Length: 146
Image (tube, rainbow, N blue to C red; front, top):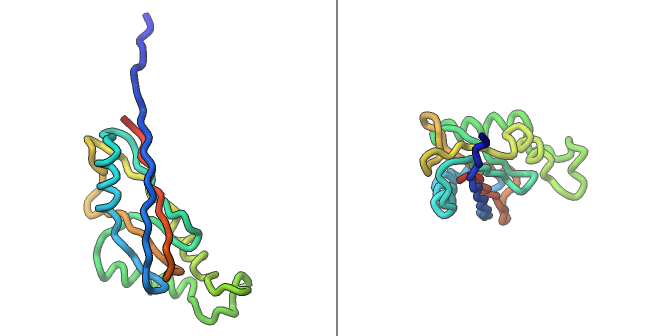
């Protein structure tokens, strides 16, 4: 006897926009993603959150001020902005370092959705990382489930 699958998957999409006034910065976007989850009506599934710009990142980590300062200093040591002439990409732009920082920090975060909530481990939060700021950029939130 065959059992019918009555699974009805939903899909939700929303863009969040951010403008970081400085060249680099980190923003905790967990509250905005939680708002998207509530708006979606999805209680079981996954949430994909990704930066839609090649010089920005979305990542999961602790919301601890010292950690963010350490991340910023570490990234700047790995891919310093100055001198801009060191990079082949900087021909009219000065953001080669931002591309490298994004490569290290990643493009997206995927979080399980359980009982209508983001299913985090202890201290986990979602962050938008900006490495070439001072202009409006977007983050895509895509939630799939039931």
